[in-house]
Length: 163
Image (cartoon, rainbow, N blue to C red; front, side):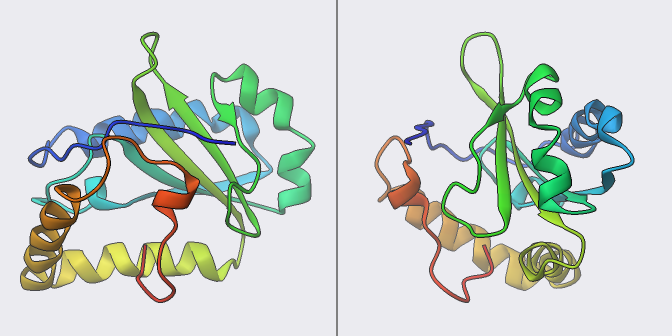
């Protein structure tokens, strides 16, 4: 399966945390399988330029429990893409009526090392503004070299890259 989205970076938008909270609230009907939701990725780091797509990491009791509620996730308006290249994840997307990507959801089971790594990376960038600035510079340089759309092959992260 291929999911293509335009790649462009924008300046930090102080509304992103509120947007993330609103998307997180959409998931409330999944409780009690849903344990919590973390706002992750570049939009979660104040001052960092980013693709204007909110990344969330919802934490669930188990992937099997979430899989049993796939139809509910879809009914909430999210695209369901199964693991999408990351073992132990359920990847879902939210697009607007024009097909513009609004959010990526990376569901993980409680205790997942993938989820812990995403949150730790976000927290590290927040705590170390100079590192975040260098990361932003690197992202801008990479963005100029990336094709105008991403597919699973193009978005595969290097081991240990933190993203």
